[in-house]
Image (cartoon, rainbow, N blue to C red; front, side):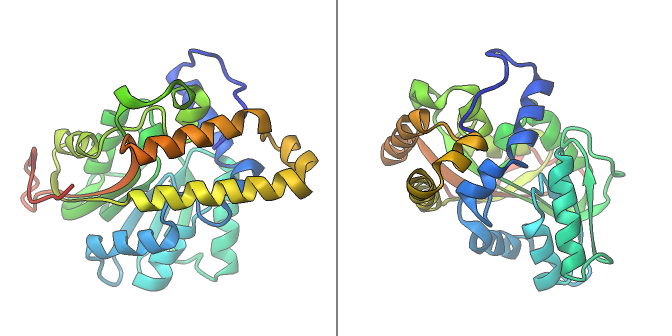
Length: 285
């Protein structure tokens, strides 16, 4: 999340991606979000991992891995071999350092890469994960097609993401800063499911986790209050605009209360025969 808006009012897709990459490797994110860069934290990541049905030695791709915490968890708790990709060189450097500190360099690798152009061969992975990031990608269809392309037949994709009814978002949640904060271009849960179906996958599960969004907003507000009281100069130095953040948080909370904004999980499978599925089977919203 960034609370400054240094990019053009009508950025190109490449400018938007660069802004997102810079924001999520900045001190602002570390100050406001702590160890967890997405609603639900590692608890929701563990639930997501359970839906992937991982077996020891499975190859897992973590798209938009950030500082690599989920990737390391897959390796430590599921004995997976993990590749993490992120557009931010800073995030990749941090993730590599974390893997080295955990003694996991042999089983986890991190690469700078664009989710819309993954540097892997087709059918390279048993599972693919993308947490709180698809909503920020300018070309969601291209990214979903890449997730499907690198997934082996019978494998699963799991995404968790901010959900939104675009028609109901207030102006405060429609700026570029809001887009970077995973709000302005978020979709309804059914919209994410449709994107995966259009990529040739079969959606097997959808779940709402709106409470995770509410808890994250509370966490951000608490951290901002501390920063305002005891570290305001440092907070402003890393890009927090206290004059703007209050209205944005208020608008986000109100949107969650109205059901306009939330968080969700979608799990999809690639048909074992490799054919395009193009349908939603048995999901629950």
